[in-house]
Length: 438
Image 1 (cartoon, one colour):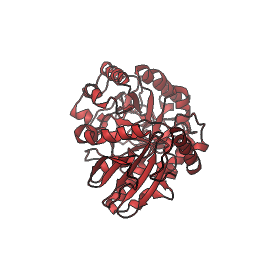
Image 2 (tube, helix red, strand yellow):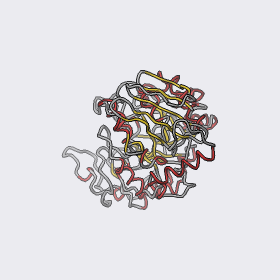
Image 3 (spheres, rainbow, N blue to C red):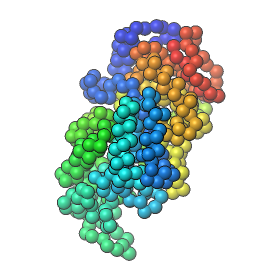
Image 4 (cartoon, rainbow, N blue to C red):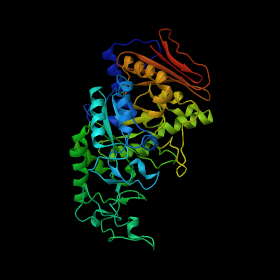
């Protein structure tokens, strides 16, 4: 790996990046070099938060549209909330994660007209749009499984027989039939009908929704919700048919400990390398390192710990998101501890594709985050950039990261550390973080 004072040409840095991660990460044994999950310089923003649907009911797309100039030049992707019509019986359901009519794109966030407007504005600012895909489960129009827009023909056969619809409460009214589909291929979801993804009508419905409806309004990438709910082989089938530029799966149960990175990596493998995954392992390792003064937890041998040390090109890193930072008494949040800039200093300098949370960015951290994004771009740091960890102990994690043009150095933790090469210049700093560009 790079020594702090070593200067390399662009070609040499690219070669080093490929060699380093070929030997350190099994991800390159999964796909060709021209795979969309190879080396990417993208930086994303999650363009919503849990309460945005209530704080700006029916007008969220307009809020987002007004903020496109603030995002332009900094982000290459914006991840939007679920756009389809959904159940809105209470505060928990209004966010769109209990979809009702996939093909109806008027939602609590705004009308289809306003959605198309903001997607056009984002595209005009060279920001691509990622849709939040919720296809593990659906709710009916009035009863348990009376699906429409689209219907599956035999709606009962579209629902796994193990769904709770098979055991309605004694006082349930208006129950129409029972599920007659096959065994669920993943974990059950309580609250919506678990769809039988082995059913050809379900498969065709999902593919048509992604390929025709969502791509038709301007989306180019997918974030799959609750992928533990159905077999990963279907992700490959849906991506092969809908051809997103990139996709990520949410392999996590809300407010639970992060899964082991090997477990998430196996899910990536089981999709046939058709999708990346959100790196919950790195996020919760960062939280643990801060809470326990155990910055050594961020190191796994010569590599960073977490999914970015195992499959960096398939990884979306983050500090907080709509689930971890939400204000919901029914689902207590697990917000990032202390100063979120400690987390951003880490993910914006490291490999993977970093995703910035809307509330962090718009409310108060834009002036600190933007210089880190610019330094990342200026150094040519990308999703496969090599990392040389210089120190990882009870007070400090410090590392050098090689880009295609230059280098970055980062320090997080209360201890003292500075790059040994005087050519590095300070980009930004706080009480427990600092980033330099060399």
